[in-house]
Amino acid sequence: MPINILQELGLSPNEAKIYESLLDLNEAGVGEISIQAKVHRRNVYDAINRLIDKGLVFPILTKGEHIYAPVDPGKLLELVKEKETELNKVLPELQKRYQKELTSQEAYIYRGVEGFKNYMRDALRVGEDIYAIGAKLAWLDPQVQALSEQVGKEMKRKNIKWYLLFDEKVKKSSTENYNKFGKNYRFIPNKYLTDSTINIFGDYVINYTGIYIKKIDEKGTMFVIRDKKIANSYRNWFKFLWDNCSKK
Image (spheres, rainbow, N blue to C red):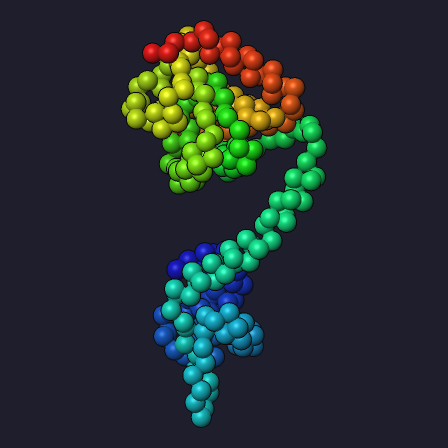
């Protein structure tokens, strides 16, 4: 198991090296662990004790040197679930404080795939209908597919509707793909196509570049504006475009 993954789960570099080494050794004393993990002997003792506290290693008591063995790696999943449980306890309060700090107007930038994921979470959190100009099925990019499915199900449960003005070249994709977002869609003629997309929901307007058919450019930029009057203006412009675009 890559050491960096263990570190992302909350283990220190030495803890990760020692746990991974013990998986290979099965059981060993401090000296052997030190050699295998390439961790100085005096540091092994501290790291071993922390791993015991975390339930990832257990000691085998003998008359001579203590021997240590790793716990089944399935325990790592328990650690993740425990952290998730602890986070869920404080998340409502954190969100409450976050909402309290929001001003009525703001502007900021999201970038790349992770920025696109933030945008999806924002849309779900706001919980209002979404209006898209120049839609390109970016939610179907494999890089965001898993989160898209989760967010899509929640939006359906919350009865959030999509109103989509797709680029006409989306028609080359399977009808099933753009039907995933409901039946409220029309097409912008090819002569007006761009590599940008605009989304409006609630008080938010998201302008983003680097969006292609079912593809998000890692270097793409999303300009986020939160302003009620601006969002209402964009919705009115959307309605004008909607009335003048093909239903077919």
